[in-house]
Image (cartoon, rainbow, N blue to C red; front, side, top):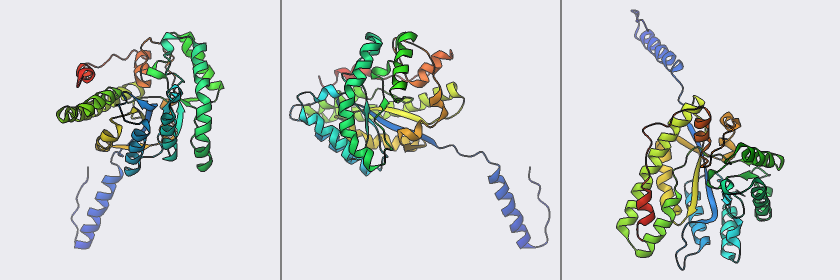
Length: 323
């Protein structure tokens, strides 16, 4: 507690006040700035492609938005089967790389580890690599190898329904030089891509406005909820990784997401920067048929109960709107 002593000169009083304020600031609790990396799954495209639309146009429009808002290099996780008999899919990936954003591995066919063997899953990872080696060579040269394509994102966030399978795939990834691109923030944004494409084809402006509002609500509510859960697992604020999907809605709604993240106190960083946090050295070593984010698996491994205040997604309306 500060004590005020009588002083004889105004200058001395001002000096005492200045010292008091300085000391008060010095002992104040430092402000913690949250950090988040944005990652995009299912490139070249997630969700419905309207007749006459091009995957490359969606990629180009999204890259323009990322550039306008000065978003740092953000990984796109590719499913190379989409390139079969589709040169435009390859153009979309080239546009992503030319825009300064790296690519990484999401298996060749978006294979579900829960429904397949570890051996089949490993073959899917390897089958995806030639496209990554080809497309990522220029970006690795221009930035000195700073962004490596050997990052892996599990499709559906399914890391294995048995510990034997989970450990086998993790061992394979480690010996193959991969890092796992974890997820801590996820609001299943893919629901909005096909819904927007349908409503855009019908020119249903009222439904599109509902999609915007529901997306904003989900992004804000789930981000706050998952920050709360991460604190329960790690006992502190961590750097986060947000899972997004590149689709028809991306370029239209991402500016709203960036504004929400800023309002919630986030700085957007690269995946490499986010996963420097020691939280990503933690392995829950927990198998579940439904998988989950890094935080959700940690909660289950540590027997942390699921909070009663969990937000809900309007899944039914998102899957039926504009049908």
